Amino acid sequence: MNDPILKVDALEKRFPIKKGILRKTVGYVHAVDGISFELKPGESLGLVGESGCGKSTAVKSLLRLIEPTGGNIFFEGENVTHSPLSRLRKLRQDLQIIFQDPYSSLNPRLKVSQSIGEPMDIFKTPVSRQARKDRIAELLERVGLRPEFADRYPHEFSGGQRQRICIARALALNPKVIIGDEPVSALDVSIQAQVINLMKHLQEEFNLSYLIISHDLAVIEHMCDRICVMYLGRFVEIADDNEMIDNPLHPYTRALLSAVYEPNPGQKQNRTLLAGDVPSPINPPPGCHFHTRCGHVKEICRQLSPPLTESGQDHFVACHLYNS
Image (tube, rainbow, N blue to C red; front, side):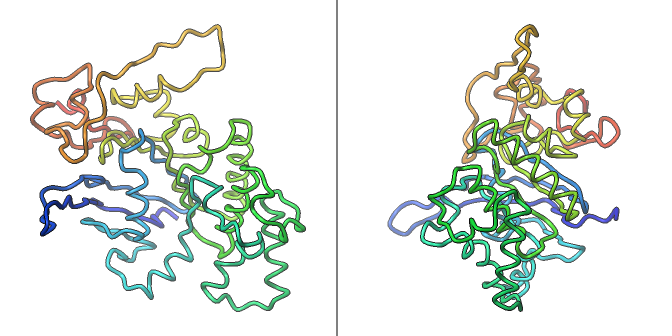
C-alpha cells in the first residue's frame, strides 16, 4: 500500500511560440517546469496556486490530453509517458477527470442517462441494456440524485446537481484515480460544501485516490491529505495539509493562506500583499521565479533557482531562506 499508484517525475510542458510566414519558433511558454510528485492509493493530493501557474496544463499532460515535453509518468509502476493509444485507453478507464464547469462539460443534447452511460459505451463495457440502466440508477443514487432524473436533460438541473452528474459519470468505469480540475469553483459556497462532503464520502466508499487542483487553499485544506503549492510552473512547497496550514514556510504559501477568508469577524487577519504581477511564463525570471514579488529577496535568489529540499518531516520547500 506504500507504493504510489501514480508517480510524476520531472514533468515539463513547453508550448512553442511561432511567428512569421514560415512559422519559425521564436520562443516557448514554460507552462510546467519540472514538477515531481507521488499519489498513493486512497490518498488525496492537492495542487494549489494562482490562475496561470500551470496546474491545469500539468493535469492535461499527465492524462496525455496534451503531450508532455519532458519527464516521465508512471501508473501502477508502469511508465506510460510514451504509451500507444491502445494502452492509453485502458489507462483512462482507471484515471477519470471532473472538469471545472458543470455547465459546459455535459452535452446539452444528451439525457443524463446517455451522459453517464457514455463512458461504458466508449469502452464497450459488456453489460446488458437492463444492467446498464440499473448501473446508471445506482450511480445517481450514490451521488444523491433520484434515479428518475436519468431521463432529464442538463438544462433542467442546477449547477450543483450537474456537478453531481459529472461525478457519477466519472465513477461509471470504477476508476482508481479521479482528478478534479477546480471541481467546486463554479458553485455557490453552500453547494461547494455539499459536493466536497460527497466526494470525501465516495473516496472512503470506493478507496479512490484524488488529485485535486484549485486556486483556493481553503478547499484544498478540506479535501486533501497533502498539498503541493505551485508558482509559475514549479513546486515551491510540499507538506501534509495540517503542517502546511500551521507552519507555512515559503513566502508565497503565506500569501495564499493570508488570502483565505476567516469567518470570525472579531479575529484580526494579517494580510500578506504581494508586490507586482505574476511574471510571464514566456520569459520567466532567472533564479527563483518568485523573487520579483518576494519581500525577503536576497542576491542569490536572483541568480540561482532553489532546489526543493526537506526542511522538516515530509515538509519540502524551495526557498533560499531555508536552503542556505
